[in-house]
Amino acid sequence: MELKKIYNPIKSDLKKVDKILEDAFRRTRNNSILKVTDYLLESPGKKIRPALVILSAKAALNHRSPVTNHQLIKIASAVELMHLASIIHDDVIDHANMRHNKRSINARWGEDVSIALGDYLYSMGFELISSYGNPDVLSCISQATKSMCEGELTQVCERDNLDLLERRYIVIVKKKTASLFAASCQAGAILSNCQGPIEDALKGFGLNFGIAFQIIDDYLDLASERDKLGKSPGQDIAVGEMTLPLLNLLESASGDERRKLKKLIESKDKSSLKIIKKMLLNSNVILRTKMIAISYIDQAKAKLKKLPYSEYRKSLFDLADFIITRGFNKRL
Image 1 (cartoon, helix red, strand yellow):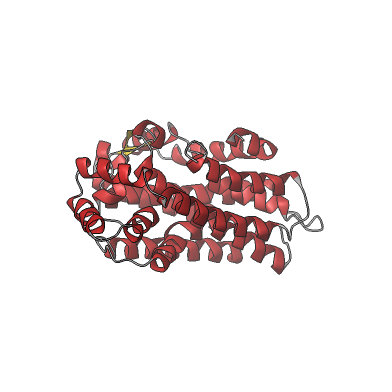
Image 2 (tube, one colour):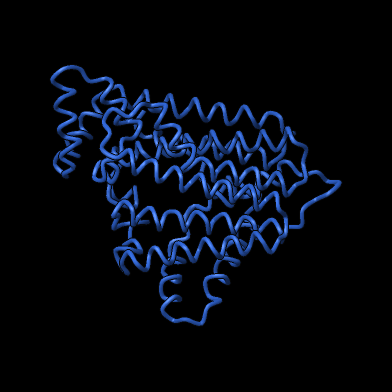
């Protein structure tokens, strides 16, 4: 199913998110800042995180105390600003030159501008959240932001660790990526004034969804082509980050093949990436990686069974299936 169809029940809401982001970016009178933020607006992205906020709120909505739509859109927009800030900082840390099939912010304006811009977007996001005046929402997203930073820092510290354990990788992914997905769903639940079990279910959905999302993203970094990926493949290997597909590939190799693979990973050059990609595609690692991702998606969807059926709950189910097909439908 196409993302456009999945988003159909909240199509008008996502357009309002775009409008809030545009207004926030263009509020400044500084022409130098406007050039950079206009560049960001040219690549709007998939809006998965704000969609999760809105879908979660509407799937869990307590009609006795409904959230106003304007408040919901503001929080959804704030979450997208957090996400944009994090990927701008990630590109600096990873020395990435491409994003959405065009030059990254750091490639075009340098690392100083990128770091300052990321900080600027974080501040804009927290300004939107604080204007709503709900301490629970503020706490939810603040904790996720802290986890994201902790996860990123841990991942950087674990670079070039070819003996990284799979469970350690999952811990990093939970913090770096899944925490914001979980917070997106939890914030939506908080805004709907739903009962605790529903909030916990939606948070659990977001967490498991986010883990699967990152596993698939890591797989695509190895297996996909630049045009489809929107950035240069092999970025994880280039900076020494050990991802689940690589860990599985090492685990499945034996003797001389394992030693050869370690040398290829350590060399970090383009020719080595091609060999590693070929080894991956000729192994059972793709199937194992897919099965692990699906297990987290199944856990995510199981959480949604606590919610009553609605078109919004269906969209959450469909979004979970979408990220699996995004990664594997043409390969398995």
